[in-house]
Length: 169
Image (tube, rainbow, N blue to C red; front, side, top):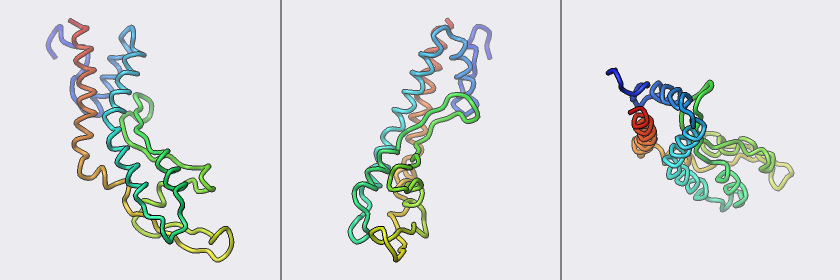
């Protein structure tokens, strides 16, 4: 690193994110800068979260007994998540558990998996039956566009690094 340059590494990697967060902490208004970085990273992932939400809402319900409540409940729990520091640092789109949804806390995971499905009672009584969801509704939106989402997150990180570098001059 050249003398008089920025006090952090400008790489766009997980290590680069850690060093960027360390540089933000050294600033006077570091808390506001961290909030701004996290917001920009979440905004970069919002299109992917919207596609995942539309994927679960497109799951058919005819003949399965699944009402719109299950799909809408799962869609509400899909959101971008950013953590800057701690045991895990990074950005991701996550489908959180749904504990209040008819006692089906693992609904996002069960409806997305390749095989099996989930067991449920028929109208709350015997017999038990196995339901299957729309496989890979969460994974499909990210398979083709993962590079675009990664680039958008990296761009948010680079913007913050440029802001910090401009302050150091």
